[in-house]
Length: 226
Image (tube, rainbow, N blue to C red; front, side):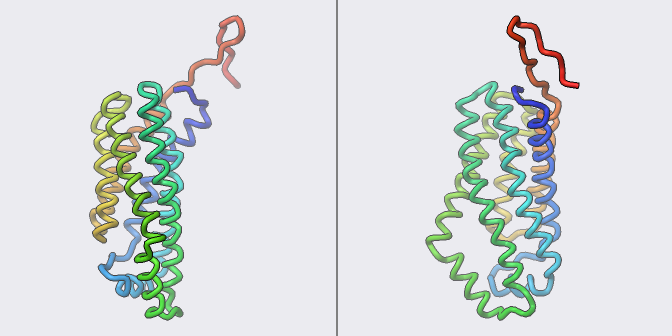
């Protein structure tokens, strides 16, 4: 893989830490509710747990960006066009997802025991029903889904990682989106467990890859840095 050791280390560990922080967040999340009113009330009862969730989900979103750069680097040596198309689409969606994840810190404060929960519920409903905000996140979610599925197809076809890991990438993202969409915490936790197994295996390949040696003008490999 044509990347230096620092890049491999960053992307490799991001592949592990992204699902791990997501798993911590999903486990800490108070039981999801079907309505915003019930959710705001749950946040008020479990302020500390919801803060761990909000912070964990934000960190996970940040880490998925370098993590997928690691996957793109693996794919581009076998199928460069596919890597850039699929990986680029997934990355666009993940950048949008960072903004969505950051709003969880806002909901943490909206559920503060000192806040007017009736007003906060109305604000949350207005925010989520506004076309201007909902459209952005709907497009981002679609980009994550399609882009990640295409990445998984690329991993499956090129066999740069075991096929079970490629399938795990696809299954985990579909389950993750379904867990959030249906307010199902067990599915959410399971999605991060599958993601941890799949991306962890990808990380082993990324961290174990060797950079091609730099050649001196006469074609002799340059000595390794001490």
